[in-house]
Image 1 (tube, rainbow, N blue to C red):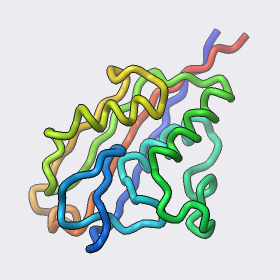
Image 2 (image 1 turned 60 degrees about the horizontal axis):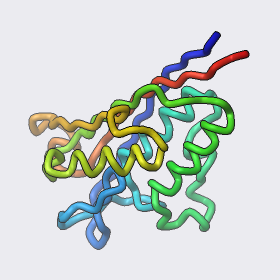
Image 3 (image 1 turned 180 degrees about the vertical axis):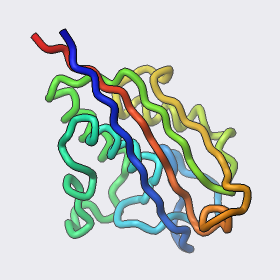
Length: 162
């Protein structure tokens, strides 16, 4: 018998000058980065929240609080590895993850495979189990005005129950 759970995550960060843009663990050649306590990888933050949600163990704000200076500038991919270790320790297996970035720029498609590979590596799964895509808002709202990037993620986890 197995237990199957779905988790959903969402995150948003504003653009700021003077930071490197990191999405899915990949550095993008872009004039602005994202504001945040860690490297502000909005895609990985949404994905971690989706995993933690499916496990019913809270969220990244509880696990990696921005009041803890040890996480200042932290690699979100490194934090994802911690979440993946906890997932495995509690008997969960990632069946599938699907992520959507909402932004006007930069273009995601030239970097999609590198992002999928980096995220899959951190999770310890094959790249085929990680989907990443992007959409625009056709100029509507904060994302449409190019003020930042939002991300959604949904995961399916399975745990074999004896």
